[in-house]
Image (cartoon, rainbow, N blue to C red; front, top):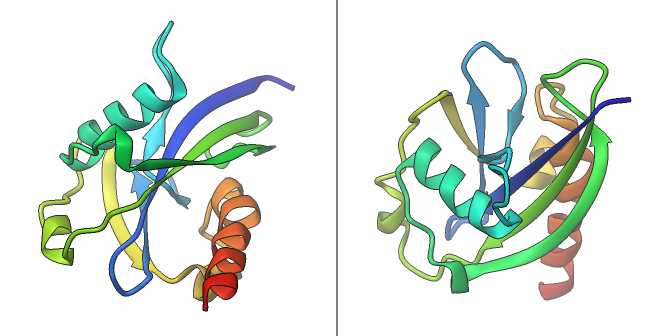
Length: 143
C-alpha cells in the first residue's frame, strides 16, 4: 500500500478544545499540517504548514512531540498515512488564537473537545483513532 507522510500540529485553547480543519474538496476534519518538502524535518514542516494554513507563526520551543502513528489516510483512498504529530503548548490567552483563519487549501475550522468528537464519522483516522485517545488520557491523568 502506498504511504503518505505528514506532519501535524494539535492546537488547543484555554477551554481544552482542539482545532481541526477540513481541506477544500474533502469531508474529513484533521489537525492542521501536511506533507514535508524534500529535506525538510517533521518539525519544520509542521511549523510551515500551520503558517500557510492558519496564518499563525508557532514558536518551535512551544511544540511538544507527541509521536508517530501509522493509519489509513483520510483523503487518499488506498494509502497508508504516517503522521508525526506535535502539540502546541500555547500558554497565552485565547485572544492570541483569534487571528487563526482558514487559508491556502483550508475551507473550514472546527473547535471541539476530543472526548466529544471520538464518535464523529467526519474525523480523520489519525485524529480520531490515534491522537484523540492520547489527549483524553493525558487530560484524565492531569485532572
